[in-house]
Image 1 (cartoon, rainbow, N blue to C red):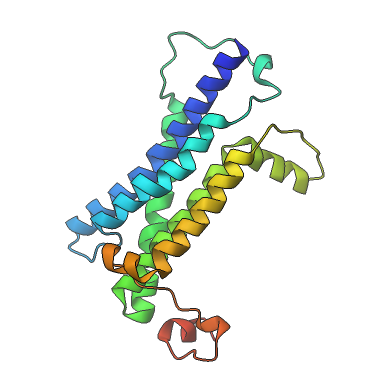
Image 2: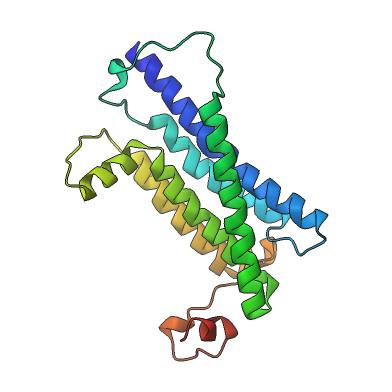
Length: 210
């Protein structure tokens, strides 16, 4: 029974993660097409986000350790829908947040630099950072971090899968934006490290005061 509750809980976490992040991308493309504006994310870039990034971050949810309070919860109603009203509300709210994040960053960088490719990669990277924080918010690791900040020590199970997922996501996104081959395949532009160098002549760097 304990294992069954854990599996069901992890399934809900996976649904709560994958649906809103994909809906945010879909909403962005749909609204951009309807308004006849530049697409903040291209179809190939969506393919990367869904086939590589989302999988890398979703699979570890299946290995979430059981909660120490899993058996303290009341029995679930067998007629309860998989997508409960609270879960649907979460999916809608996070989808809207992702849309605002993607569209907002894209429009801001495009207006600042005039470079659509740079604006797209910045929007994608902002979305992935948002995904990491959202992933943490629905996992025991995220709860444990918040409790630690509040001075509460909370034991959690083995979180190696989650550490690997976050680390691999960051590495893959660096490769995605900085490797020339990936730039050609996915029509992205490398992000300048001008804040670490002497050449800060780009409009993006100037906008940040560098």
